Image (cartoon, rainbow over all chains, first blue to last red; front, side):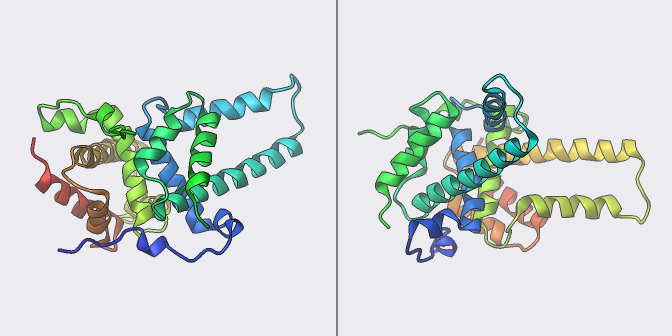
Length: 130
Length: 130
């Protein structure tokens, strides 16, 4: 029995990085990919908890309560950035630039959620040929 | 550079099936695994949407509104069953009884969320040696 290529339906010709970073189906798959990678990294027991902690910390920064609009704008920007990061990471995995193992490894190099994700992104960026 | 074995931290000696099915860390990893598998199956664009649809359908079944306690009991049972199914599936993957590709394939054999998951579970169950 020949195995199907599960990556194939997602492999499209992207001619530029912005096309990858703003692709909604890629971002959706990337979200599930990154969530699975975090679950496999024993350092990060619960990604959602850590994400909430990190959001709480940055919201409380400065000692003053931010205005509602500022918080909203910051949330939207974070959301767009997270989508872009997740799309990029799964694009790297789909095109065999990075393996699941390498993704978990890169994440484990840091004990902090954001630094870990940054390390993972840099690892993927170095390997992507676009 | 030697690759780390990302599955190793999760590999424990389970002597019986109930030990696997009720293991919370396995269920947590299984949730992320199954979510990723669904995301890779183009038939299922949005697992959450489908899950909600399926819950709405079963809640509405019978034409009468169920009593709150009944709905709650049903939800708790569903939750326990889902945790058990997800723990079993990721246990099969961790022990190399089933690959990510085979999981996506098994799911794609059905166009219905619940049937797909059942097919995936049966495939895993056939391959598991415990």
